[in-house]
Image (cartoon, rainbow, N blue to C red; front, side, top):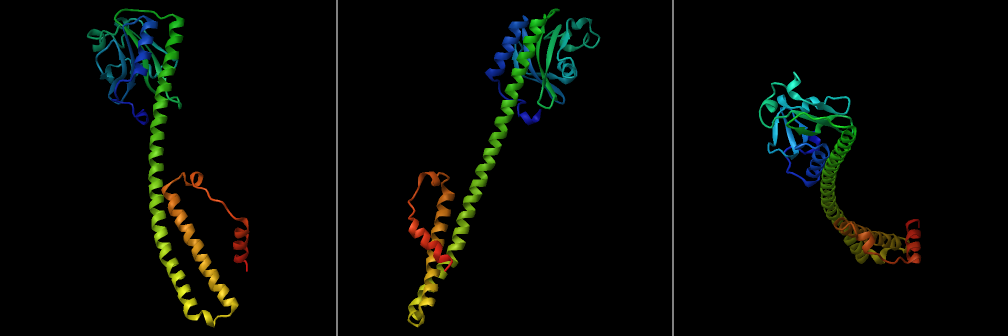
Length: 255
């Protein structure tokens, strides 16, 4: 239940609408969406009741979540030895009639109930029971949606953190790569200035390849750094490619 991050959350209209509908269908003054914690039952939505929670020891819902038939009904708690001396029966809110549908997770684990309560004995017909079960499924749909959204927010946060780390890495890597690359370019230029006349054609070609490769690598590093700052770069910033230049560049790598 804790994975849903629902306990002690603020009231929400979506849940309140369902408890109101449940009370109208069943003709009861009270309807609740109850979650059973370790020591209490807490009401996510309460129609016709002001109390936000009650002790689990007195909770009818603590019995209902263990019901295998899909619904737990007490027509008159004063005649039931499990509840006849319960403070919730003998005192306010005087739970005489109770009907609760367990709220089951996708794994079939009970977390609480959608329940209706009356101050006098009552009997639900089959149509009312079917409607109450349908509403309980809608409660679970809201809970599952809440859980999915919470997990999605966590995933988005982790993704943002990874993107920040990637950008920092790209900046550091670009800086660390540019420093020796600049040295290669500077040394090759200095070498050509001082010894260019002493080189044969093949030697000059090799130095030229080093310089060209350095320039291309610098462009790739700048592109990496720019892309790390904007994930839309590939679709927003496009450039034309001269296939003859590209072909010549590829041939030079194998020369």
